[in-house]
Image (cartoon, rainbow over all chains, first blue to last red; front, side, top):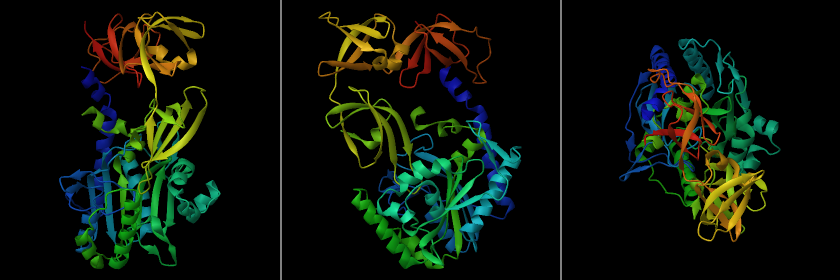
Length: 308
Length: 187
């Protein structure tokens, strides 16, 4: 009876979860996006310094559907979305599950700035479908207005506002993540959502460098109520540059004693065909948390790994 | 040896030869960034606290503590008295050292007392304890599917949320790490 009780307590959150996912699908289908499914189990992942994939025999469980989706984009599909299960080794906390649900979408002919507007529209549309009007109420009863436009804040400006270092100094001292995680993130998306954008180029391995300032990558993260919800960028489609970036990530992995992944050769071979485009990964569980007023990711999934 | 991914609340580690307990724990990982483990640590001897952020490459020694099974006898104002069942030796812990263990401890039960050398420092509770419910609203039959919860009080005075079918006089199992209801115990 206790097991039934524990699961029954989640009924409202699970209802909201289902409604959010239906709204998201409707939003993209209405706008002529093709919903795709790509394999969860893949032979290579994009090597990134701090993303660990669980092994599955001598392949991996995907950490994101990014590589396959970009290969489709390169083959001529102009607008794609996917709701996919993703896996990250050793990630567990209030906002992290080792298996979670990601929404990714890719669009030809747009840049990261256009995706900001798409985010505003998507979450506004979802709120409308769930009869929330223009305001989300969080677990601690804080209100977030979804009225457009949302705040746009460069990484450089955020560092000026909340710290005494520049982003470049923080990277050089290996303190960037710590400062973002503890000094900056908790202030973002309060009252209204925040797009934090233009990251140091070394922190956007698959992102295009900005045309008029190659020291930054065309990358943004979206925050609501201090929670990192999505990561987006203008896609890098220069094969040589991408190989160089991967090499750099592999060296950082090796330096930390991590696995050096095989290079995703088929993805790299497709890059010259990748049109100018932008793509984004959004944590659907976290989006559901915001609509359900949940303080912990455990509250919006039926089963956590600990319950299995 | 512990790795950073082992860090959690109540873990006991050794830093510079002294035992520390993790009193608060937060896992933070910017999507593309490194995993960070922010801990509040309390020196188990001096009680002094500080905050430190660890990374996945960090590792720690286990705190060099001994446990001795002792019987909880009584509370006297701000002190709790425990007795070694074989030697009858008695030791005292302060309310601060006992901390929330008091919520799960009735007189005459055996608990593990932690020692650093010959200094008693605290209590290791079993992960689960069974306690009798002393106060609960009666069950309105059929009120289960909605996943409702109601407050109940157990014999130590501790209050928690339990399913509506739990009634006064019944024994329930509590997870001492989270303080949450686990299941009803049928004798």
